Image (cartoon, rainbow, N blue to C red; front, side, top):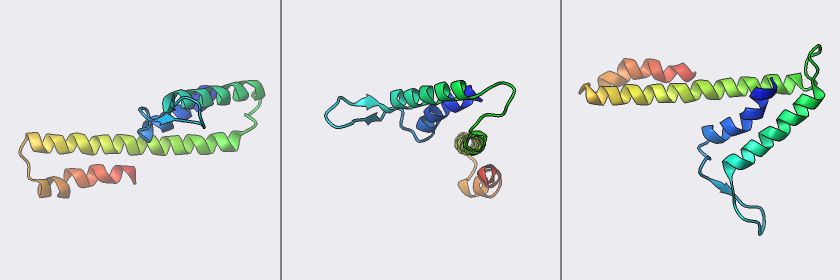
Length: 114
């Protein structure tokens, strides 16, 4: 639970394609977005470690459940998009027409995220 919630900000940064972005606060030097996400995740991990006991559910169990659901939805979307990209590339390599690919394989792969 603590590990998953600690890595969630970094995964969101990866999902939103912000790994090469920078964040600047006022006149301070720019910080890479992944460093900021890692720091936020570390803070979340420390707070959860200090407030969670093994014998009882976590104090923020509803929030953790919602974040887990959102992370699972992001994973499914990411995998479905990659599957569509791979199948499109395979269709180009095998010289399959785009309309045939769209009616068959890509329609199935595209509905995976739904």
